[in-house]
Each structure stands twice: as C-alpha cells, then as structure tokens.
Length: 196
Image (cartoon, rainbow, N blue to C red; front, side, top):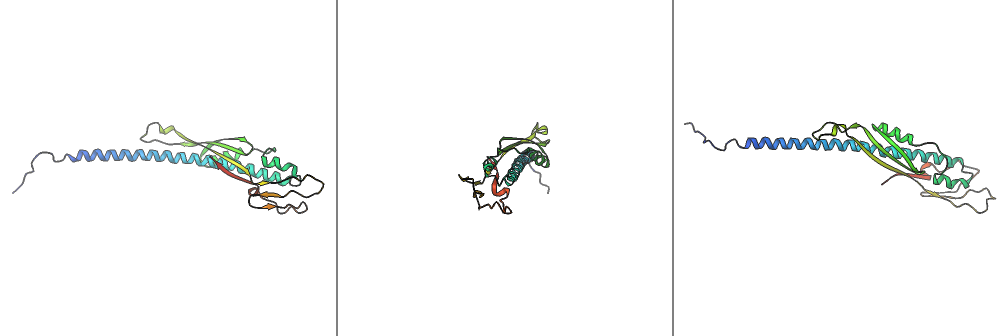
C-alpha cells in the first residue's frame, strides 16, 4: 500500500537554510576583508618600527664612534651624549628598512636623539566584499629614542691626564689614557628603543 504525504509545510526549511548559508558566507568574506586589512596594517607598522629603530641605531653608532675619537678630550663628551655634535645622516636607514618591508617611509629627526617614521605600504588591501578597499594603502608611524646610559664628572683641575670615570647603567669604566683597548661599545653608551 502506498502512503501519500499530506501537502502542507514540507520543504519550507530549505529556503531558510539557503539564507543562513548565504549570510554565513558573506560574514566569512567580511572577516577575510578585515583580516587582509589587518595584515596590510601590520606590514606598515613593521616597516615604521624597523625604520625608526634602524635610523636611531645608525645615529647611536655614529655617536659612539665620535665618543671613541674624542675619548681623550672629556670636555667634548657631554655634547656627544646630548647628540648635539655634527654627524652624518641616518634617515637613509629608515628608507632602506621600509623598502625591505615593501613600504615607503618618511623619516624625521625632531631632536638629535629622536626619530619618527611614517610608513605607507606599497600594496593595497585588495578587492573584497567591502567596497573601496582595492585602492587603500595602510599607514603607520613609529618613534625611536636614543637614551644615553652613562654619566661622568669633569675634574676641576685638568692638570693631570686622568680621564673621568664613566658611570654607565651596567658597568663603571675607569679609562686609562695610556691603554684604550677596552672601551665601551655603542650598546654600553646608548640605549635605543621604540617610544609610545
């Protein structure tokens, strides 16, 4: 005997199922667009951070080299630790690091011991379900600071040839003008870090 199903509400769940699946698919594509934007933004921030740190480290290395040159003249030390001596440019390192991170950088040194870098990605966010993102490039900025780690006191009487004790964060340096083989390195004299 064949049973016939009564006609009525059978098959009504299928359109609801299709609507839910379509909604979930759209939501997944929207999350993908947000993810693409986050990755692109992360690339811009990496370029800005790396550029600012690289420029500051280049300046730190120049300051340390200048200090080593003038180690026998302690009257020049303070200007070196303040960063007010004449040095070569350092922002080229920010451009170099930004290019390695597929971005362009604008570097500035508002103070002798500070670098700010604004980076913009070369790639756009790309096409997505969010209109207008295909031409959007991510931007980010970073600031790196050079902090002197050492202090010293000049003797009132410069008649003797002794050098002042260099009191640094991790070590005190008693420098012998007759044996300058053991001098502090750039990382002993200055700290380089990102600032908020």
